[in-house]
Image 1 (cartoon, rainbow, N blue to C red):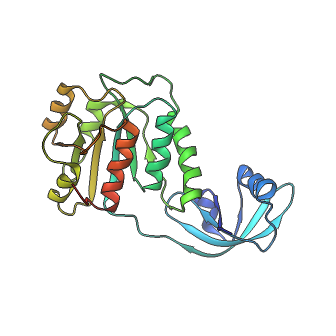
Image 2 (spheres, rainbow, N blue to C red):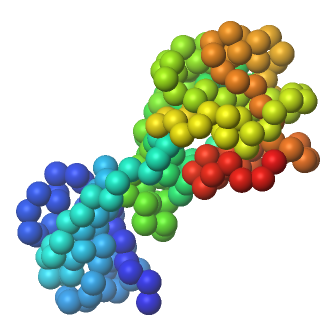
Length: 243
């Protein structure tokens, strides 16, 4: 049986006993049918994990006894994915997979060819919820920070100069992403820009290049935007292997 994981508030791991949030308690009691003494793992989404056991379970609440709290190191490099806002369910898929790939932050942006609507506020709250579910599945300890959608120019300007700044463009015929990553050496932070469903306009690519982003490509077939974002994150996380 796989270890059952639950997401808790960061403040909850300050003591020896943790009360599960209501939704998590319902899942533990009604779906998983856990009992006192069952081992569980608690994640706070901010880097800490706790080995614990179910201490008490009833109709009102579920309490856990904490045995040990640890904080694994953040993965290097710090990965920031700047993704053109996508329509659902493509955006939801990207959020889940980028959480599994331990992205530190995801900055959705709007651009000339953005198809998805960005006028609705509160998108980041939905992405936070999806990321929390993904953490429980994969066991990662850090939930990405999700920004509300912003114009591309604002996202480009927010990238620190010391970070490796890369942009994927399907029309580019020069270096691949793997080659660009190797050329960057061993940076502490990597920013990758991936356009929306309609891609980036040539003038936007030029704008990014002037902002210090190196243009590169993924070789082979043209990928959907969400697939390209996931592939780019995997290359950064696991090393720029191959061409």
